[in-house]
Length: 232
Image 1 (cartoon, rainbow, N blue to C red):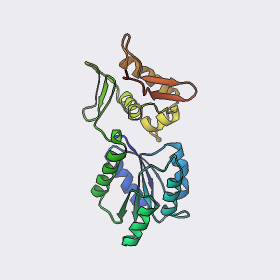
Image 2: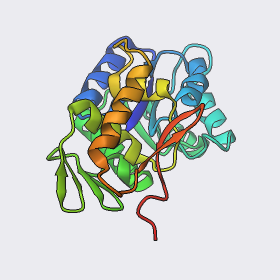
Image 3: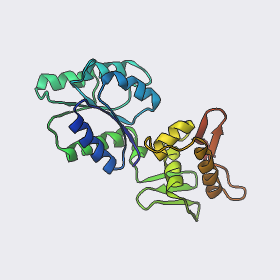
Image 4: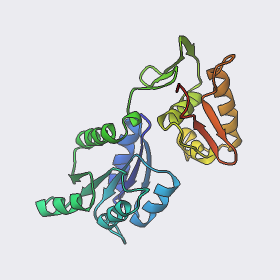
């Protein structure tokens, strides 16, 4: 699974615990200790889900959630509120503000992971589905196998991650910098031209003869998996 999760949590041990366990489950994770950074991080790359601490320095988690729900472009991002407040009226307040779920500290990591997966299955099944399919191309996350029609396609690990990421959101255009962050990671420095090289290699692997190229180049912007692929 390559769903993206944004952690907004100011307690460093909890932030580290969450990051480690989510990455171990295969999620892509970004984290901040400041609620005021949330809007910028969401605009930079829309997460599939946000883990949001109630008690934050400066702007509170409740206010962050309220702001997210007030904007059309962020109102449908799932939010799980993390808090030490366990009273019923506080849970009601958090849910009434727009949180999709509410979990009290100290919490069970397996329970939190189960709740995350339940929400993602409901709102974005492709984010955790074991198999992605578009037209005659199929990608199996469990076996790491890619096929087109009846032939197997051999991809490098990087090309597999690139295809997987693009296939999750057909039609969505990703800039080179977004693809670098998602596929290579923020901690690894590579030039943006590296993206062009790997997209070229991926295209050669996916397309033979008169087969349709499923990857669309959007001049001046980046790349997308063509949402029209396989139609008709």
